[in-house]
Image (cartoon, rainbow, N blue to C red):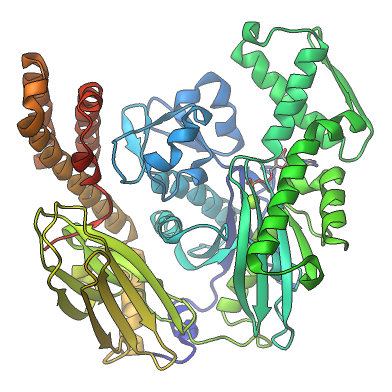
Length: 617
Ligand code: ADP
Ligand code: MG
């Protein structure tokens, strides 16, 4: 392991280049940098504003619009206007099924645990591609405003994001042409913006309360030696400022004695926008009084507070729960930080202050604070802050090979050492008793382009249908740079492990070349990955569908069987073309066609046989 490998990983690539900090939000996204006066600053691309609504619109020609311009299509073309992409990142359809009606666009239901896709026009988009569109827009704005290429970034994610959501965020950055130096927790970034955690001699426990447009979370962090540890998080991913707007809309509907079922979508949307305007106005004044046509839109501060009180109370319960989960009491909290546009509402601020019994940090704009902190983190990674100690970090990502020769990163590049991480895998074949584990190092999506470190076999997995075994693979990298890879099948307890030294034979030049290659090939790499993933999924579906016909053919009608076979053939033909969208389209059609009778013949073994990522034998 290289000491302070960050310099080698970044500085020597392009010394003078700017590293930006990006807050990729559910409602709004923004990009910040450290200005020549050494202060963090949000980039305002002339006239376009600081906040970029996280909305993407696709027109009939497949052209993309991002931000305010895209937001306008939420009314006129909702099916092709994608908002709240962040909610979809790294999620499976199952995760989202309960909230289906929140989305106006089509989320593809492929009845298994693979990641969701969105259909707009004739094309299928992964949340990674959609997030990349937002990131590209931010990159473009930064380049335009700063008049220099921007290729490196720190991107923030909620503290509760899991591994695959973090990896999806990294991939989105890569697809947007950004070298993502680090994924940082939003509460960590917000703390940094307030200078909390910058003094290595100070030990602190802090609470970060983040109420955004559609999500709420509270995190309790312990900070020691410049390391931020998340002690607990709590919240509700379907609670935010949008709820405040909705409460006002309903209040107006009541007051004006309107019947909601007779209001068209455009009027509802107008009311919603007016409600948001009223809410913001009530942050600084006591009364809002306007009219839309002959609808009176009037509300005072007191009424507004009463309307939102139950929601705010809910967030306080989360704070209580978070403290309890961290094993702490209010007295243990040294600082409280407010994040998210909705904390501008005085009633929210007051509730947080009262709960924690101390004033909360609110000097920095709460909707900018995360991006500003991300810019500070970027500056630290660039080695521009001599006052801050850089810890040992991994110069290259470490991971294993999965289906189709893809690299699955387990410990990402720039992770602080020592560290450990793990993920669960399964088998791809029925009765598979051995699993080959190949360990790789590097940033490319295909393992063949990365450095192979080791390979071993986990033997003696009990014979089960594909998808049932649960194999945990854990990576532990100690302070001496030794990586222990452990594989364990959970049902049987069979276990195998191996030690490797990832830095062995790795020169600084090699690291540098590998990093440069990963950036130059980013686009084609991600495209290949998505094709391979679509293909694995399609092949798996052909396999499942064929087995389904074999086993349950007797319950189906003649037409159902012949039509299903036709769909299977069409999917096979698509698989042969190696066209991602074609494969996904045919897979979707096969699913849509078979769903009604597949539900009729519910078969636990078949549906559960498709869970989890699998590794080729
Ligand atoms: P996210 O992190 O979810 O992307 P933001 O932190 O940008 O979202 O917060 C967006 C929310 O903040 C919206 O609901 C918006 O209406 C609300 N908001 C913005 N300004 C104000 C204000 N002055 N008073 C109250 N709420 C506000
Ligand atoms: Mg946010």
